[in-house]
Image (cartoon, rainbow, N blue to C red; front, side):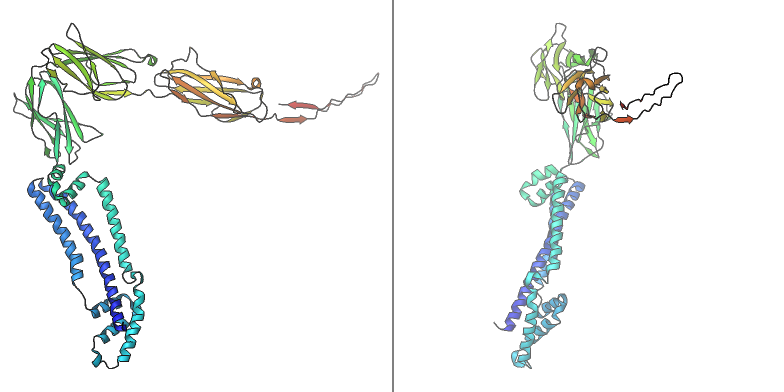
Length: 530
């Protein structure tokens, strides 16, 4: 292959690298256009509503954005095929080290051989250009900076898009399905719609009963919602604020003592649900719901009677007895819990119904009845059961309340205080010497048993433990409540230290006396230990 052909091949290699760079850069713009098409489509859908015409507009706008990016950043650049001389100029501009050699060589090659002034000079120019161009092939040296920039941009765009679609609202994923999965139009359009789901909707309610209305926002959020209703005897609509469930987008409201057919709908954030109707039937319902609560014996709480009950909030282990009045005789009934378990009612001679259950965990229940004629009447009101946990007691050692040192003959007073919501059943001090067998001292007596905040103290006579310097006593306190829950204090350490010694030299001086002389005695050294 001649030098001229080799130079043209080198230029073709650089052209392919340029095309690869254009393809990578266009991928960034096309991917961005796809994201913009989804976001713009969602905005249009929300603004115009979810009709079939809106779906057509959304797809037209989305496809137009993507097609425009495809044509502008991929098709047009690739169709503009520059001549070898113009492409050589492009290469020279981005590789100043060529020093115009490539441009000069391509200019010489454009001249027919029979018209070249010096073929030898042309060959040297071509060979010089070829030698300078070849290093540009390696690692896409000419296009690498822009390709790296485009690759980083594409990577960041992909990551941001994935995060947006995973963490963002589901409506974005539904819009993507609407745009790029045409056969899912009906499903995606349904998911994208903004509407309010109502429970129970149209329903038959026993005369005098209450009913819970639940509204769930689909495809949008709202900080407030209103239930709007009217009865047959009134043409005025009444607006009633609904309470919001903090854990979801659901709002709730309750209608009491319904005696006439009632129409209602829910309005939230400018979106209105369909209008539903509650019809009145001559079937039994609960007219009064009384409750007796018997708390666990360890709590020391007296039994409680609630005249008008329903919702229950009680400590775990509480027995709840429901005594309900009904509007007409019933054959039977059950407490129907949200886990589908049931507790049957006992029908008394006076027509009242009675059932009991024990509070174990959070739950919901309703009262289902069966009329005297055998018609099943599901409860229209759902009541909540909140199981209040019996927290474990807390216990602390407040004296000495720190690690200490003492001699083997000292006394250590340990002060303990505890606290429990329903009372402490027992308190103990546990200790062990040098990691040996654990010993227990009880602090509970008739003065502090069942107290909610008892205090007690115990003195350890260290001399009785036969300790020696260097021994280590570890101790802590334990408290237990009536339910068997236990709590422990921090562990403290007592280190046995040796006696400190103070030597004193006592000197006594004696004086001589008359009459018989006198003598003096020396007082020996004394050792005082403390």
